[in-house]
Length: 223
Length: 366
Image (spheres, rainbow over the protein chains, first blue to last red):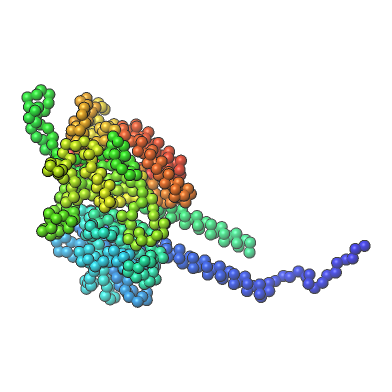
């Protein structure tokens, strides 16, 4: 006859978690969320960059087509200013606007209101990344303007500068077609923009570069 | 906990699928939109082609019955046809489909800084010449495009930036560089009495040069095919219907797919029967051109690389080139449809998305 098993307190079934177990699980869950959130933020910024580049390419094509259709030059102006809501050390290119220029009197009137790049996206203002930032007066016409009547209300809060590309009725642009480098506009996140130095060997962590064909106004996206 | 995990995984997978589908559709739409725009831009340029043909008295034929006393003359040249074949344009490199080369008044004077004969005149005064004659051309090439690549990307050794693709290329020869008007060692026009391949050097040499005046018009254009047609010529074959410009009209006015406005000068025995267009094409542009563009999407090409690897994608590209270059040398609709079907099979076999665009052009000089 075999002996009956004796129940001891250690073999009692438990119905709850200990505090230590709860803490371990919570730590794991929080760590997972933190990793996921950081990845999500990167993906989100990358999507914002991509969306901004596609929108800009599309608007530049629109500028080219409008110039041909109306028989009047259309400018794409990239505005450099310091918005109130984003604390940056210096003004950045946060947006652009399409304007139709009158051939005779030379005044430009906006086609639409200013388009802001999405999220923290800005145009890199170093010439090695955005070659339109090279200050050749016939190409990138950078100047201070006091003509507030043409502005979006966002810009009217202070001083601003702009670079412009002009699409002409014959399909060409005002950019010099005989330069050694292609004409480019590079979109990066604002953090990258502050980090990058001109002619540095570094490339931005994430970027979208638009190259513009001076003779046809055709735009391509590189990344 | 298990149920929650399953729900989370299901939601995650659904969202990933949705995002993939959305980005794929967006990429496809972007690619085909840029192809359509390139097609329109190319069509606009080609329809402005000019030959400036004049009729001159032909001393030899005066008084000869049946031969008109005047003959056409032109200093310019228009040619289209298969890019790779010996009987076509005989271009070097990985070219695909057809090519077209011509002159037109695009008003692009060129870079006079490198031209010693023009240094005394300021660049701006040349820029005022809005109708200067230029040589232009289009062809499709497979390879890596480093010329248009932004400098900082070129310096980055990351191989992700190296993209081997089919691209629609545009040759631009501004007025100052017009090769066609150059003279030889005896001060005689270099290309006046030449036959191919020497005759085609006015566009072949610049394309071969190290700093070639060529730029990309659109990416992922696999082939562009030109089928010149003449409604009047077709009407004879169709029983005198002069309004024919319909899609099924036979538009074979080429030989081996080649339409060369100087063929009658270099072809030793041009045919004289009604079906032969050699004499009619002498210094005359074709009245119409049907342009067919075969394009794929960037997303589809990337998926092919991910699935098969860069090396095999290159092999597939070469197989496509071989298939296309071996066809489309007869302009009749039936053979064109048959050839196109053969190309479509290669796309289907390799699971590559593609689209075929067609546009009919009327040449403005006609």
